[in-house]
Image (cartoon, rainbow, N blue to C red; front, side, top):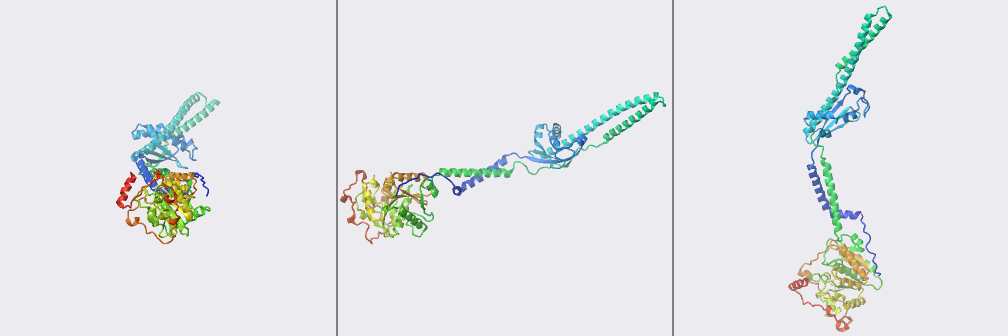
Length: 567
């Protein structure tokens, strides 16, 4: 098997990633959406209220307006021009006088005019912070506009009448001159007839002009009528509560999604298989999270058992002829590697092959009584550490699993840690010997984040498997583990996704008690086949490889040793 490493693929996200982000952090989005809605409500309450009252005025032609046409309608009056006159100085001054105010600029800014299509109606709107002020302002501007328009019309009529009177005066003077000439002329002369005709014409013109003056004097001016009085508004038009609430909720939702994305980016823990793929590690399988615990081997037809059956098939298919050793290490501290190694070894042994499971991971605490031994149902001692220390032979440390006859187990043993224990030449000799007597070797190694022993063990194996705990193992730890294995040339088959497991074993005497070892059958190694006893093969531990043997431990002794181990 070639050791190749392509490196982490480029980071890419699809819709499932974003949906997963929302599913994991939905409560943040909900809380911030509610907070945003509350903020929108508070902002809405802080804004000043604005009430608008409307007065509708029907505009009629008056004075010279009868000669004005155009605008947006076919009427005689240009209502667009009339709408602009609403803010004229005269109209605003008249409204200010009615309201008893002198801030004409404020009044001009508060009034607005709308012209409904195809009508001769002006809708005068006035905005104020109080409903009564809005009503008074609309009424004042309507009255001021009509009064100004009526005054302009009357002034125009007066100008017309004055012009007619001036013409009448001129004609009267001309008539007096004509009458003087007639009195001096002879009735039989030709000049008399001409003067008499001029007198009649002048008299006729004077009479016509007097009629026009009388008509102007009697004409009634009506510039317009208020067809809808201004009313007290019942609710403010500003602020718009629905808009402010919706804007607050939207901002809160966007903020929630941003916080969720930030948490997701800062959270380096592995949550799904795609996180492994982005770290450059293939996903070999995932163990279901329900009902999983570091207590026993999965049954063949359980969900976990089927997952490890598939893992077994992939491992066997990946091996080339002569390859038979796989090391299982965890990317982070914990029992994940123990659970994966034990279940993989059990799955391999169910095919009838002779499988040796080697425990090379010391518990994080001495009070965690041999988790591998509890899993497979064997005695915790003697084990690998006793063999490396030369206390027992390899055959004596090899035990047969109670429920799986073809599974042989070498536990970690009962010694405390010793420098270089897993990096000695004796371990290489053990692996070499076991290759000749077993079909497959599964090595449970310490995590790559806790010890360099995982690299040492991986260098002796044909392939490696990475055990990853979801929501505990981080992506940098996965990348570091893959890099460590790559540097020793061991092919990394991929990672196995495990649910988050409890790291502290219960101190139950029945649970810590190992199942009895089944004596039936010939052991994998007979005593006469053992070449690795230091007394017979000449290998003696170096000074820095000396181990400390422990006497049989009761609960109090384990607690004392655990405290000493921590110190």
